[in-house]
Length: 375
Image (cartoon, rainbow, N blue to C red; front, side):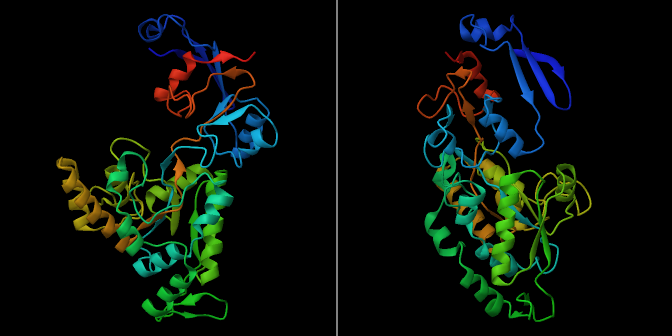
């Protein structure tokens, strides 16, 4: 029923062949067929391998992280483009976050979690791990962009939120927790518990996330918290995250969509139906529990009054800031969308937004009927 069908598949490559009698050609495009007869999808082992192929013109459109992509057209003169032609280059839409296993002592202490949040150098993550693709991240589960921005309370975020502030992290450790620094530079709680080593992980080969967690570990170490990185293969990382077999893990709480920010709160905080550690969970990976948070999340879908909705989201977001079971490290693009016009032209972008920046999936499939061979 779609415009393409599988022609060939292997562990390295998937090839799709155009369906010339696809019903949508006539119904939606005036009888016009998609420009390309075949779509070849190579499967790369890492972002680095995919980025090199894209730069060499072996890939026409991609949705993977490519560092410092502007250098391809500014310094190398390549026919490469992104949704925006200036910072942040991509449309913000996701919130990759650091999740705590809140049942593991001493990460079960909100003060420890907040000290870690204050220790992280977010600007360094944006610059070095994200190639400046992330605007300034806020201490909120509500993004200050798009349709959900109307629920974002900037004043409360400034008053009660966290940001990169190593001095405040140390103040929390020493004054709020009564911790003292050991000879190795790592703080120890009054009961003798050393703050680490903790392990933070995400899948190997996710280069922007790997670099982000390295910065998290370096930042935490600088204030006296011992965090070590671990980058297992994706299936192992997925299993660890879902079964709660982690100290800290990195994951994005849901994709962009019309249900935001409710869906993000539901995935991050909602405890009803979440199994115990050791069983597979599909949300709330840190097994956070707060009955009032559950009630607020249950209430919001039933409310239609915008003023009441904003009040409920404000209360829920403030509760999140108090307990901080996870916190965002960046605003990742809705989709990493970049195109190379060596062989095909006509890709959508912010100046020609006839389709969203979703390369050849969903509404982004519209591009297939707009492309033309490069002259």
